[in-house]
Image (cartoon, rainbow, N blue to C red):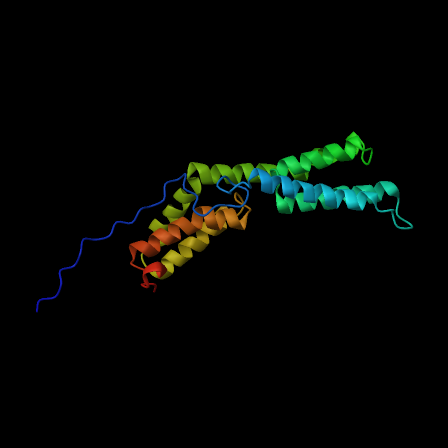
Length: 201
């Protein structure tokens, strides 16, 4: 009996620059809750904030500080439940704090004048640009070409890629899931190592 003829070589797709792999939290692709679910979550947020707001302030705590705590707790609950986008939750909380007299406008917006805040925002902008334009993947491919003669060299290439991209993409999730993971998965598939098929090495 002659051995079976080998099948045609499998083609491995390299992810395009716009494909960032698994979804990064907060990116497009997350399922938005339905209207009924969103209304219920929004009601829970308002109920938590109102309950703390109406509770008398403990001794030694000013009423203004207690009300600010109620707004803060309601904001945290809103960020967790996400009845509306997170930015809208934060904006609504700041607006309510100003309208209710808990904070002045200068106090509510004072954080936006902090240069550290804008440094973090700029870092996120740069990280998004690295992922969307494919520059991070190009850098990874360069290290793969230089160090990818052996499996150990590939490992060193991935480590070097992570080291170079760390200052530009401070988020570990975005860096690993958006740049490193798609390349690593394609490399494993091209070498015939896939956990889904039981051929992992």
